[in-house]
Image (cartoon, rainbow, N blue to C red; front, side, top):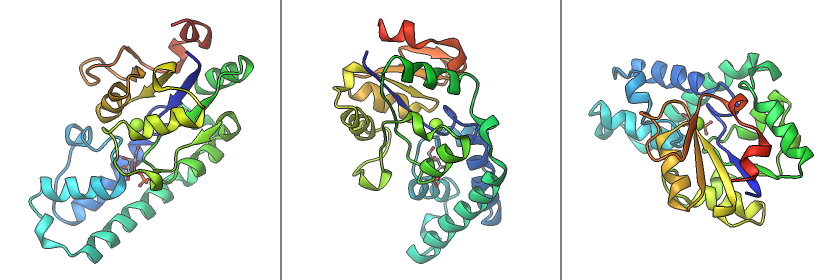
Length: 215
Ligand code: GL1
Ligand code: MG
């Protein structure tokens, strides 16, 4: 194994909860009740598509114009970015900083494959951006997760084939994308929630760069 690909929300940073809070507020305003179980289907999914899924779930997709949904997506993002205000280096999830520093020492490149447009901003706030050889720009994608495109692009940023890299994900859509291009998948969460992952861990403190590069 010659490189690592990381999802951001729920893998590097504890920000998945803020996305959920912001989506839930928006859904409440338009009279749609969402819960944590439904939220599992939003993980790893782009802003626009997440909103479409919420509207379909509440049977309200036909009620809003394109302009209205664009304004709703923008509003959710404003709320989300406000919630990020307090984000600091302590909000990197357990083991993240140590793992990235170790990868740097071994000269193993790391990249970020997140659907979030806020990824560069969050990496700066956590003080870990310098560890990454590249960040896939979600604006360059033709398809979001579970399509493997984002993971193929992340491997390309490191000049690697997908099967020479390990992908880390906390969402089923992400695990499906990683496996869809033959990459080794490590899920963060529980094996019931992350079907098809090659290995499931709670957080990055459970693995070392040494053991993973030997896979
Ligand atoms: C988008 C969605 C979020 C989440 C992330 C991926 O982020 O809005 O709910 O699914 O993608 O983790 P953003 O709005 O920051 O581009
Ligand atoms: Mg995630």
